[in-house]
Length: 129
Image 1: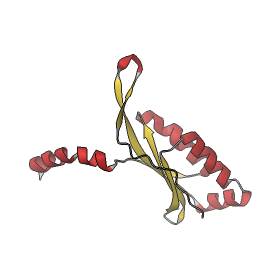
Image 2: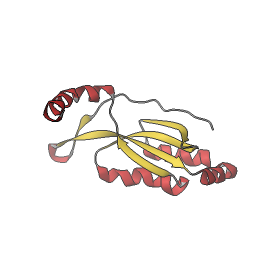
Image 3: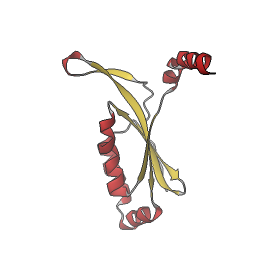
Image 4: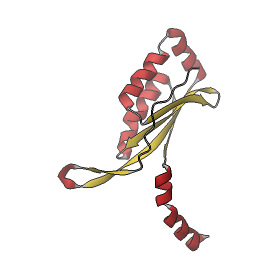
């Protein structure tokens, strides 16, 4: 299986301007998808796996995409930014519908985000540790 990666952005959580001057957050998430072997083989044999994945990536506009094996099948780790949870369905449905993929979605942090959390680690450790 060929693999490639898009350039990854290392920007941490950031503010954005909403309507009427309200400020919100954009959070980074990693979508892990696993394409069942049979479905992947079908798409490879029909010559549609590459174009289908490219079309989905064009729509998702990920910050990064890494194509790997997931539990012995074709898969990917796809990094996207989201403003709210309601954005999850339009991001994952194309993967499920076109590729038959199993999906996991997890919030992720860059090193700068982890550094910002260190004070909370200390507070929680003192209270519960």
